[in-house]
Picture 1 (cartoon, one colour):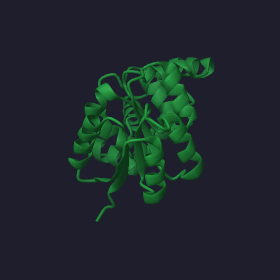
Picture 2 (cartoon, one colour):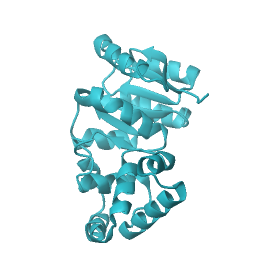
Picture 3 (cartoon, rainbow, N blue to C red):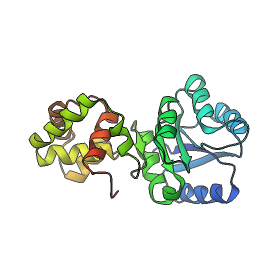
Picture 4 (cartoon, rainbow, N blue to C red):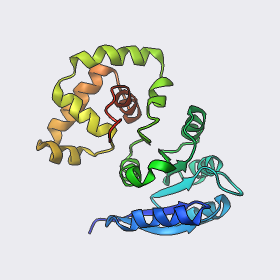
Length: 218
């Protein structure tokens, strides 16, 4: 039996917390193991339970989500953090990324994007709400931007499709099933596409995908 993804939720708004609880409990591979209404309570709970993922509100009493993420990065690096927020500006996103978060979701789109974000983050991806994902590209070095724009002309259709699915958080095996190809073939397409564009990490692939508009309608 496949191990479930163990999750701790932290948000000081009970009604919103209830909605998140329902989203998680509706998925058979996700398990909610704890809830907290403040940053301090969340830190204690996460230390104790050691979940795979902590979903935290940025604006919480006692300790906000950014400070909590920094503490978790230093104390429990195996626990991945996904933050929920009302803030759509670049400054908050940058603070969160600097604090080591792996997912950044706007509360207004949580019902559509949360489950996909959870799976992307747990499999090692970086998930940024599609409506602000362009900020990742905006903050990238100009050299990367120029290389990506030139590189897009030489991508094959299969290479582009694989990179898009990688950016969306799918694993190699999942992409292979979707495209009805072998995992080695998928790895080859990913490697070739990444080499053409000069992309070394999943985060860079996400930036590129955002710049091409691939994440706008997911």
